[in-house]
Image 1: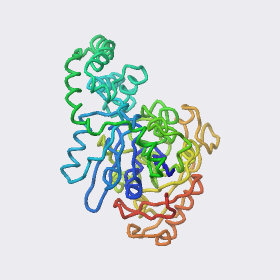
Image 2: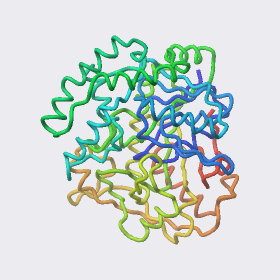
Image 3: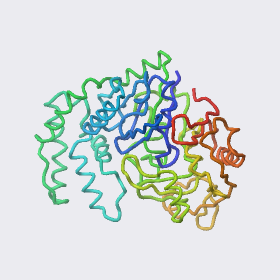
Image 4: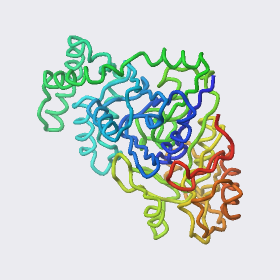
Length: 427
């Protein structure tokens, strides 16, 4: 039962798309198990760049079946637009499967997300405004709309009415917005039903049968460990569980079927949105990392906050996810620095702390304790093996591996599909 989980080990944007795509030719199914179109993956194939938001990266691999699991929230308009864009570029999307139990992002979820964030002012969380949080809130409050509801107009209407009973009160009386008409929402959602119907199925059954048949299934997380609703830097987090446990609930596969958990790490650290970030740089080094690394959000278009590598959060990700391997990405971005600082611990109230503090207050006040490693100036994008890397680059990787608590089994040395050094096979 070769089931693998691949997830972000920082705050997201670590290059999961590249890692998933690397494995895509060797796996039978690639499954998104949480999040929605607030996540984004960039995959470079030859001279073609693909920006994926909702679809699993495996959709670019011929012979691989991409799956949107029950834990994902689906905006039908975004889904259809993304499928159309890929079809126009000659990508076969016919194998896509969507769980009938996945929840639907409705127009009123998007509206509530935007007006709530605006209302919070300086206390805003930094959401993408795409309705993700309100959709998960509806799911927990048991007033959510599931994909399967699009095929029963009576049930759909009842559920939209129930959801809007409260939301229209908030919109009109608190936010001074117009009420949203039930009929208008129902009509829009029904308009998507037939277009996505060919993809909708019982994905839990499909995936478990695939594993029983010894098929290789890769579970692909969106965002990253430090954005997990339970284990991230709350409240500056996403509304789902990108950590490894989320793969089980978000895809309907038991934990005993997971054989390997791979964490994706950048060779430095980035974050999008508000929240604490101990190693964040506000100087020319931070700007250089942003410029050289192309650090702009795939989905949001926002500049990412940049900082040096944080071994404390890497160790935390190893522990929370039970990581068996790391995939280190964007090592090439660090080429040219004479010295590269690495955060090995924090200073909090004058004390050295080597593990992530559970207290939000302590983490907010954490100051990085750095060790400096010698850099390199040689171009590494053509490296095909670990020994091809400059000695200082090798030592940097070895140091990060020792500090992070799991072996680094692959290294990204450029954005291209073939610009990867594979040290140990993930399969």
